[in-house]
Length: 276
Image 1 (cartoon, rainbow, N blue to C red):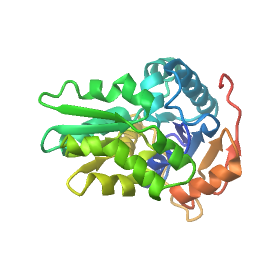
Image 2 (cartoon, rainbow, N blue to C red):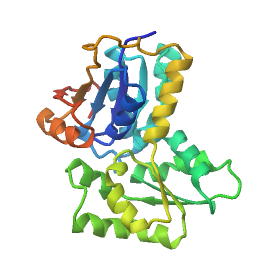
Image 3 (cartoon, one colour):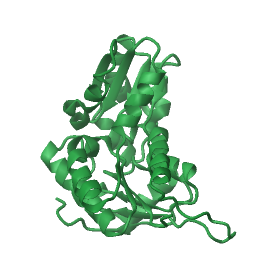
Image 4 (cartoon, one colour):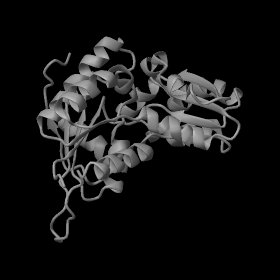
């Protein structure tokens, strides 16, 4: 047993979709979440800069004694996964879990016509991380598409409206015309936009997110390594989740409550050493 928290890192609010799934899957566990909202969005930044930012955030979580690190950001995963696994898993013996491989596996089991669309930030799409993850599966057609404005909408708290719908049509109409039957939401912000994405893509297209699959991987990793929190049997023994942000805590907490739920009581501001 290990009663230390699960560390979850994201560039902003999107990783809350993963945090929600982890909390639901592992109700005895405590989550320590860090959203680097001061530097969001990561997508337009150079890969080297994203790597520096991501490792600074992961360093902060590791320094606070987490028992596992979940990189709940596709862009950060694409830029920094190999460095993170060496720094934390190999050197510090902290398991590192990412979001790309679980989502890719889920897409393969979901597709019927073997045509899979991938949407993500510009950096994630340019990295070809999903295309590489799916390359070993024969007969697949993978259609990638960058959707850079989606993160900005979510970080502003906008999940409906004509401007968002217009952007969704611009990004997604080519994927619908390519006859994909499965669409991977290759950014953890995007599940917060499933209403508009589903409307544009139509009922015949399955939307695959990494949240549930990543929560399953986290559950299995903690179970296999005997790192689960001891069972909470007392009525007043409830998890105390903590939320960190690199910008305005009040704004972050307000949006986080909207997207994750009442578990977000407040947020604390942190400065990341090595951040930009």
